[in-house]
Length: 86
Length: 414
Image (cartoon, rainbow over all chains, first blue to last red; front, side, top):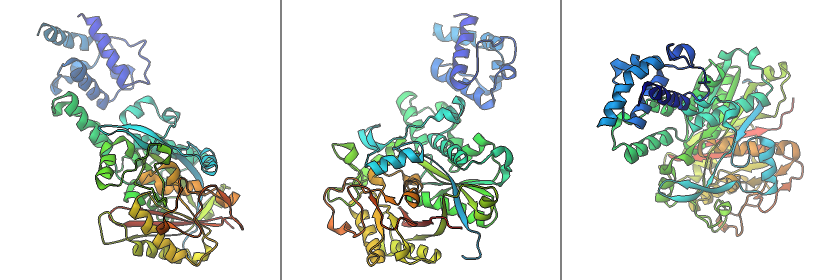
């Protein structure tokens, strides 16, 4: 697992929950909400899919760690690695 | 009644197991074609059911479909189709003057059942996997509210819970709100997503009221001696209603006029119908329309293909229309099954073209008439051309807890 793989996992989830969005040109360092039509309910969907598909829990105070692909990768990579090691 | 504004229908949008527009649906009714097929139901195998096949993406983004409900999608499709049919340009209409009134038998069963099953099947009943979409999906106004979100409408919206009398009840609510001046256009009718909840099927089965037949197209058979229960269906039908003066002023195509209506209650039982109150409801609707039984050219029956319910309705109709030899009687559930909260609105729509073509569609699957359901005017076998044409339709829609609704529609004459 590396950061690029984590970003791809997040993008795959976004493709499911925001199927009308074009994800070909998403910038890693820009807030997802600033470049895609995502609202707070969509972020709850991202959190739910991380839980359902990958067994990763994101506590509510840490939702802001998911604001961009870069922050997602930084925040989620240790969790994926911890999950793989378990 | 005379001093109240006259209310007319100027648009119809529908989806049902026989088509996604009125001409297609009507053609199938006149041709005697069933819309019932086999449908997989959780824990119950394949059951006869009425399934709709409309293009959800015609009016919704994929995200809207994912977040919303099936009933919402049905409602959005029907509303958009009705608005187009009424030639209503939303850019030129004040969105706060459009009211939405949809009849529902139930709402939220599908979403709750799906979520509970998912939790039991995959997540060991851990509620942290319960979706945050659950409450907006299950609030009772959901199907009507989804229309407002889809179209940016800002007038009143709500659903009318009226069991299987709801299709008529939604239209009646629209008529009343127009007369009160609460809106200038009413999007009114009924919707149902009921085939997506196995609890609905299981409930009817436990009641001994779920249809079974080796050939699904022959499972819904009101008035036939071999009838054994209900075929559950989904669908929707929404009308654009307007005050006559407004419709004339904007040059709308007037499809028909609401002549009268009535909703009453049996006050006797949770499930068993009461023919005395059904007859009373029809009489009061006639009185409301200032009509006599002889004025009714066509009675569109509610009959759901249950042994007792059909007999009771026929008793009520026989008492009221026994002397009215010109009144024809038919049943649409024999073609499409029971579309629950949408039934009254969809069944009325299938008969509305009679006002123009004078044809009366038949009742399907009556191979051997049950003598307790024999009515002189009952049309079986093939569609007929009614002598003198069809000028007035009386539409019955009844439901559990003893709710009866009757709507009378007439050909528009200036």
